[in-house]
Image 1 (spheres, rainbow, N blue to C red):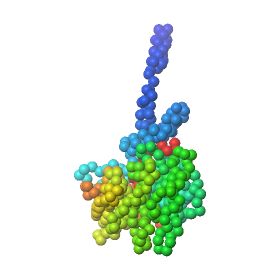
Image 2: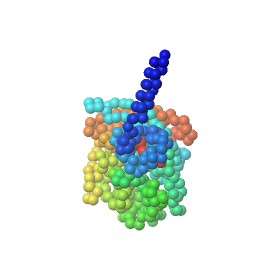
Image 3: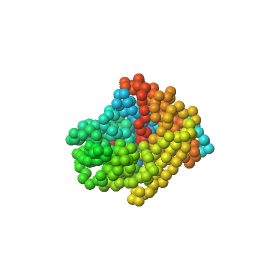
Image 4: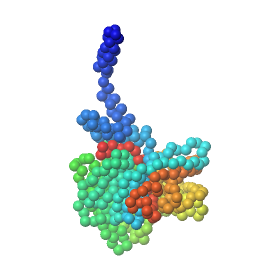
Length: 402
């Protein structure tokens, strides 16, 4: 018996000695380990020590975490729907299934949607595009930026303006890791001419005390609500105050360099009509779904920006066959692998689904989005007049506001 007790003491001592002699994790490996963790895990790690909390909230770590999340983790689509009778926008997200294998002409799968929030849609005009999942929404008196990864939001400083026809755009600077919000009011129309942009402000989130700064130097233009942020440049639709006969058409695209805060006007082809801005392999693309003469077919017209300085564009036209499609479909965006995303304009069908069209393979695949039509939510589930406003790809795990 005594011999057994001595053996147990030796084993306990050996284990204790081994633990004390274990080398600590090298400091340069800690950030790499944390970058491989989920947002939920990092939220818990913040409570381990002030050192961990400081590291996780640092600008460099947030930037590197976003880069790794964008390249290694599954991405989601961000959906915006409008309930017209109630004047509300509803936001959902759903993970994008992987691209279909070679040789498959068509396929179908499903993805479960996650409901995030709702906000007023009127009288503030915005389609609330997603920038790495972040969404900017709300009126001038209470403009918010929401992060669906952690379900938190930041309320921006109130803008001192009496106008309600205010446009706000969210952009990202990959060189610094800064998110900036560009906000502008629009003047009253004069005769048949549209009101021009005025009172342009910009705010760098997390810096300068989150204060708005006025921008004085910008081309005369009338802003539109369609926008997208690509590689440090914010693009949005614009009308030019040159000919009142063009009231129903887009005439240009305005670019805003998020780092330098400089504007550049980009002319578009005279025949170009676009309803969405998207990204095609890192380049700005304009897309539109004109009426098709063939049943169950969606025509896609796209213009890809080749050179912003020379205003050079490349046009492509595709006819997508959707046999059995119950409702009218529209094209909304392009994924990072070059697939067009089409969806039903109305949610009146029995099941809601999106269509991925691969122009290289000339193939389509359906992805049924579960949990949108079935959601029991006030002002939502009893509404028969719901429509798709926007679909944006590229939602990733983001540490903003953690």
